[in-house]
Length: 107
Image 1 (cartoon, one colour):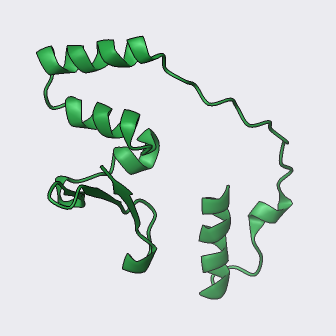
Image 2 (cartoon, rainbow, N blue to C red; image 1 turned 90 degrees about the vertical axis):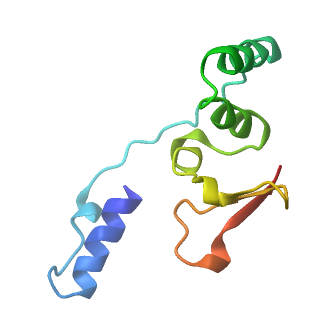
């Protein structure tokens, strides 16, 4: 909803709208879901399968499992140019509006 709210607020600032229709909505309270933890044995099996059958998948799995990079958004939008093997760092640029707000993770 925050994206819709921001979109309509932008319309108000530009003079296209007089009020934000998102304010008319009733929101349902939700409880946060527990984070799913993958067993180390399963991680090992997935890494081994990628190593044997799909080398393109291996960096995705390694960064997702061991660097704490979220799969939705951060990891799927990651580019090889964001990975610096010499400095052993990964730059997360997802939803970053300016360069100073980027998040850097160590490898």
